[in-house]
Image (cartoon, rainbow, N blue to C red; front, side, top):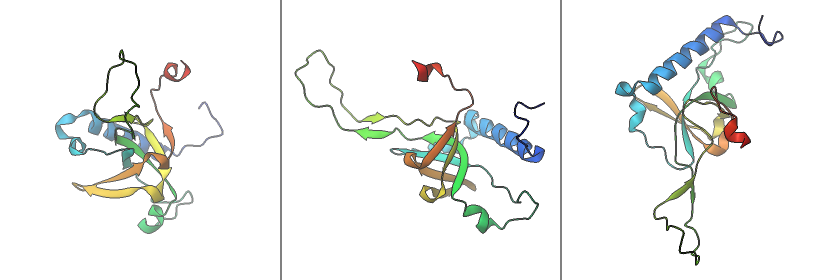
Length: 157
C-alpha cells in the first residue's frame, strides 16, 4: 500500500516520469554525446529541459498543443545553471591579512543540475538546439525545486 493512500497516481504517467528520469540521467552522465556541454549559461539563468506535457485531460480529452503551452506554471529538469548573481568588489579596508580577490564574484544559485524545477512559464525563453527543446529561466521565476538526494545537514548546520 502506498505511503499516501489518498493520492492516486496514473500508472502510465508514473511510467513516463520514470522514463524521463532515465533519459535525463543518460543525458547528464553520458558526456560523449551531451550537447549541452557547449552551452554557457550566463548570470542568474538556469537551463531547463521541460517535462513533456500531457496530451490528454484526466477525463481523456486530447488537448491541442496551443492549449498545453499556455499553462502558467511549467516544470522540467535543471540541465545547467549560471554562476549566480554578480557581486561588486569588496570595499577597501585596512586589513592587510585578507587576500585581495581579483576577478568576478558571484552569489551561487540554489538550483543544482538534476533538480526538478517548477517555474512561471511567462518568464522562460524557449530555444531549440539540435531538435531538442530547452528553456532558459531566470532564477526569480523558479517557484519550487525538488531535489531527490538532498542532504539536510547542509541546511541545518
